Picture 1 (tube, each protein chain N blue to C red):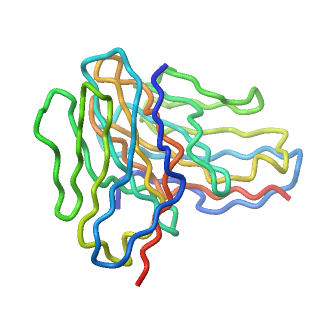
Picture 2: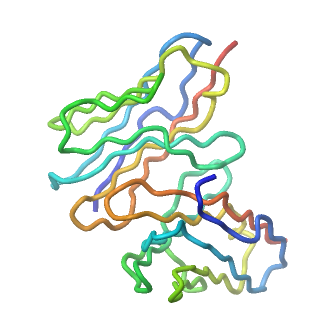
Length: 115
Length: 111
């Protein structure tokens, strides 16, 4: 089974600064999708960004961008100009493009934004 | 609004009881997933259905069961409830090969 590892249980960032959350995954597949989800205190799961493995260009959504290193099986999330509303738990997730079955989630990184 | 509807939002019940959680996926999504999230924990995958058939099973207890109906809504049945079953239960739906859309969850408290 695929595994997703988030090695940073907690991170903090000063408001308006930049922070990078790390994620690595293990797979033998070449066709897959990677995601970052945000879970604020309300505990709603919100999609932040998506990356298709076949795309070489890193995905960007406003202040959120990823650094996708396919050979290294690394998928980090960069949050620029951090805002208080970015404080949340962030989960990295993997989905096979072959079987399209379950999503594999990392254990999460709790991000604190310091005013 | 993700388009995924879960009911009820909150549920308080006693140990030994049985409850049913309901999920209506986004229109057109054939896949439904159930996840359990205990306090300050990650997401534990329970089970996936695709167009009415079980597609993948995770660490789902034998006391738990699920099904997906012809109209694609799904139900998660939890029986012989224990204190440790208290958690947030998420349903998510997804079209093929894209992201999962999560409902707001059902917060189950077993007392």
